Length: 109
Length: 111
Image 1: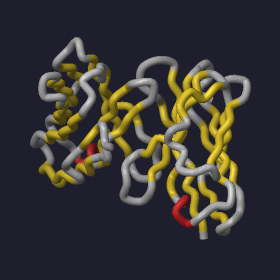
Image 2: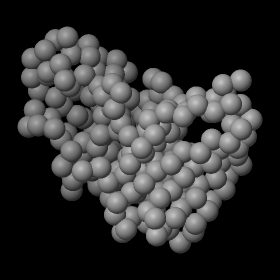
Image 3: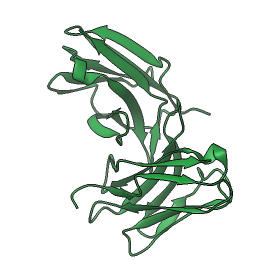
């Protein structure tokens, strides 16, 4: 039973435009979420996080939004750059990280 | 070192052989996790250590899989009698609180 879901396996965005990656979760007790980026042949690297006491967290070009009532979070990247092309995983932080299945983002020139 | 280190980076083994994968976490990190990523799949949780104890082994796929952690530091993931479906990238992560830092992974290929 997938507790963290990323329903879009892939996303293609033009350079300079906004990328929006979505994530849904099922357990309303989850209260801390993270986004990781993964390049091929490398381990995932931490990108940005959000606590349930907030509904938005911003770090440069990256913003994460949390809608607790909908049990939904999203990662916005603006403007998107070709170097952002990677697989993005959202995760709920409980005693372990529960990951979604990932969304492959491709940013084209 | 400054980050999580895993060895070997690549391992090719024959079906039926045993393999050991090693993880050196970030110094001082009390929590250690093993995940694996099969081709085209997401990150599958295997096991979690807090110190030397493993409060959550729920993700280990079968009794061929085991892991230990000694001295609250290095961890070894052992797969006995490997099968082709064990082929994956095995990722280790460590944490001191919220979030986790990952190693580069061990790519295991069972032929």
